[in-house]
Image 1 (cartoon, each protein chain N blue to C red):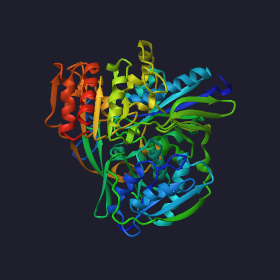
Image 2: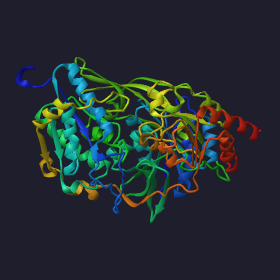
Image 3: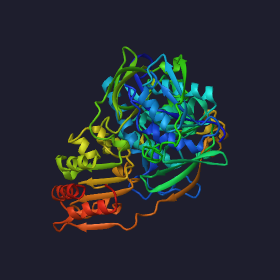
Image 4: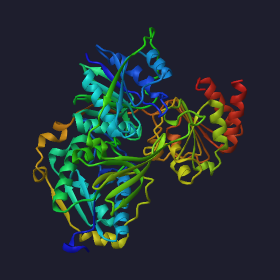
Amino acid sequence: MTSPVLVLLDHAADGALRPSAAELVTLARPLAGDGGVLGAWVGDGPGPDALAVLAAHGVAAVHVVRPDADPALSAVTAEAVTAVLAATGAGLVLIPSTFEGKEVAAHLAASTGAGVVTDADGVQLEDGVPVASKTVLAGTWTTRCSVVGAPAVVTVKANAVPAEPVAAPREPVVVEHELTVSPAARRVELVERTERAPSDRPDLSGAQVVVVGGRGTEGDFGPIEELADLLGAAVGATRVATDEGWIAKEAQIGQTGVTVTPRLYIGAGVSGAVHHRGGMQAAGTIVAVNSDPDAPIFEIADFGVVGDLFTVLPQATAELRRLLG
Amino acid sequence: MTPGNVPRVRILVAVKHVPDIQSERSLGPDGRMVRDGGDGTLNELDENAVEAALTLVEEAEDGEVVVLTVGPDDAVDAVRRGLQMGADEAVHVVDDAIAGSDAVSTARVLAAAVRRLSEQQPVDLVLTGMAALDGLTSLVPTVLADLLELPALTLATEVMVDETAGTVTVRRELDHAVELLRAPLPAVVSVTDSANEPRYPGFKGIMAARKKAVTTWTLADLGIEPDQVGAAGARTAVVAAAERPAREDRVLVTDGGDAGVRLAAYLVENKLV
């Protein structure tokens, strides 16, 4: 591809860059032609911390778009991305595979004729055409899809590639754009938006290690949390656990909840129903503790323990604390 | 009923027929989902959309629910399930040229069908599930809304219609925030599986569904050229598909008192922590 690659830079309302930005920029670098990797930042511009991260990862230019409507609305962000595409001639757009990100991709498909692949875990160029890889059917199959439509829009899952800094960082050029959004993007009104208070634990979708509790916890997440905190891991849950109100709904891992692709997944009291597997089967290593030897999770576990999580987990935590010093 | 027998609330529900997720699902040599395994069913997540539509009509005490699907002959089972749950009418768009459509082409066919139904009688809401459990792209609701030039309110866990104001308000829960979104009617709304508990069709519902009509349309009926859909109209193409190999060297131990210690050793030896 001889054109630049554009990355939609995800950030919190307070301007804090989300981890997906450095990962997607790393993924974009070998794909970018003349003009390099460009960032699209929608909203009030990046602060020095965010700019430093973008410089370290090789972003050539950051296009800051200030729309005259709330960028939390996906239609507004899609028009901002379209404006940057028009200004830069980028042929490929990488977007984090969050619910909001996929909505932006859908708007781009409708408005620009873009070809869209969602939930990719890699992108390569073959004869100049972007080809995205992904796992499908609850993590049991892999596919590679070429994007014929232009521009090519690929939403990329968290942890698809580790973020790697460049050898010679350079301060990115900052290009400012003012945007008057169309009446179409104003069809939806954002009545209220409450950002969740940031947790001390890592973000579930991007975490390297995830410890998960299911029905077998019977509502006691104590052993799960203790192990998670020792490992610096995120805490997740099954649908049953969130439906029972044992833990907040945003902790639900599954094909309709959060999709996780950590290096290490540890499930305790998790049976491994297909709904749940759809959200975690692409994890690097899967560890399962369950008292039921017939639990389907043992079919995909690299290391399975048939036993009581209330004895196995605390013992493992104590031993790890000793081994890790 | 209001004068002229026009129902007060008219809701369309776009649904999809998908392979049962509990069955052995696979992709064919062309990279397309194998759909003739006989394990097809109404996409579970669409049951939440049908339920939401039925509830809204019940609350309005007058209205009509139409279920709509695009897909091969078998796909009629998806709208029949909607009828059994309590929908009043069903539409099935079926045409050989549709096979191999991507999300955008599918939305194009749905949009044409929604327009046709809106010409017959005004539509207040188009409801969908949050995603289809086969492709799981969740693109269709937003693309459909954009093609229809209607507002898209997606991933609703609550749907509140204010008929007097002519608006719909939804609550949605995202990874980092909770939002309330509002738009004028008509609108496209996708609901999540937390929105409600779908009803199970009883004997009465199943019997009543037998008398309900399923209208069948082809692409020609909707004025869509075959090259706009299917593989010809797709902007993405699957170039390779493979079943993932089973994980190797799997270890299963039964706790004899030291499984926690062995688990810790496994994590450390494999440099996982």
